[in-house]
Image (tube, rainbow, N blue to C red; front, side):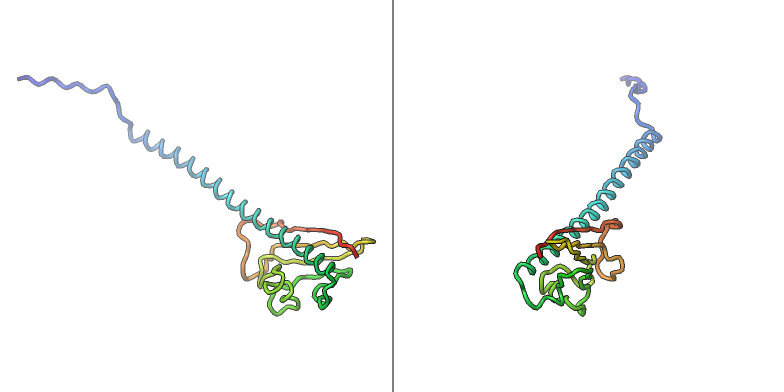
Length: 161
């Protein structure tokens, strides 16, 4: 019996160069996608920090409004509503930490990631309260992740005298 003569196939396979070129293109695309995810993560952290600082600023104004409207006594040294600027406490040993800290209204934390201050100006029939919240870059404790430079928040409100 004779064996049929084998002829070369007309189908061609991929060469090693083609496979390497395809892998290089795939790698370039994947690196670009991963960079997008990294940038999105940093953007998320910055937005999260900004949202937290806005909430803190609003809470300070609402606490001042609550204490002022209730006529609570004993808070004049901690929460003076007179013209001037005040820095909220940042450590356990600071005066007013019990009022503003976790045991009180929960606005500040020990070695917090942010600093809070408020300024009161006379607006005629109202007090104008401006709360300024900014990242605490000098903190040795918790810090915000991502880019928070320039993420300071100023929150203002009018409170009846």
